[in-house]
Length: 416
Image (cartoon, rainbow, N blue to C red; front, side, top):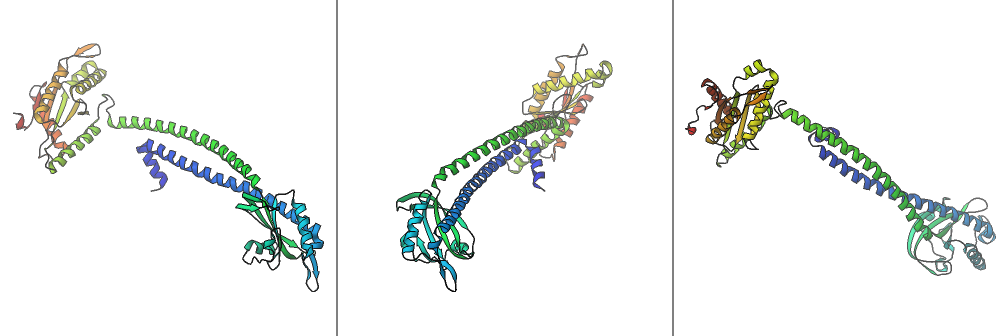
């Protein structure tokens, strides 16, 4: 069975459960969308900052090369142009570079040759070291710019002043010789900490707008679904009422009456198996006397009035948890849980008196209505509810043959 089919079955049985499921799904989806979107916004904003820092670093490096090419490049016979920066040239290059970078947020520069050796750095302690396992340097030496944002708890600027808690974009920029060969690489450290707040604010703003939009969409959807659920529940209630209620008398119809009786009979059987005190159930079958004469004399509308009034009087003559139903035509059945046969006789007599003592007004006439009632109680020999109803029905016909307007029973010696 497909998921949508299961959901439809669940919705038909319990519309509220579907609404709860949709709410849970919406809440989970809401948080997932917000979290994923927030991360995506962060990646987008930080990516923009990284790209901007990368472009700035590339431009700065190109300008440095153009300005300092006489110091940076040296012609080597048989090899062509190579990186210079030896002896006093390095000091001149360092001073020129620091003056040029002073207005920017660059706080460290390294220059690598083709052998991954640092031939210059604003941190003199690094000069001469070889960074053999640096994959990003390897990419740069292949001619491709590589930029990445990292966090550093502590760094130092060009004046050797400490920079705590900084965000840095490390950019590797290939150094191209005049004959367009890669002969080394710059590694430029750009401080982008000032963008941290802007990134957070941008992410917060976009996430907040998205959250408001989702709340609006999910809220509106919830209202629609809740309205539909309420209509579905109302329709289900009406269908259930139609399925279980007699349309004229508004008491249980035969199907529901039998279903409830079967449930009660199964409870009696379970009690017997458990050797507990057997639960009793009384059954009263009732038939309105001379009902055909009412229809023939006063019309079917009068007959309907009589049926409805008899049903009402039955309702007020029994307990709230007793089951009364229209069994068919002018016949009614009353099921009395936890009631023995003797108690059922008392109830039946009360019903008979309730029906006959007060006239029923129909078509402007005061009609004296009586009924014949048959009574039966549950017995250990009963195999199903039908056995009990059958005895009550036989008792009812016995009452009719005995002159009507009376209570009768069949083979129930404990009533004696």
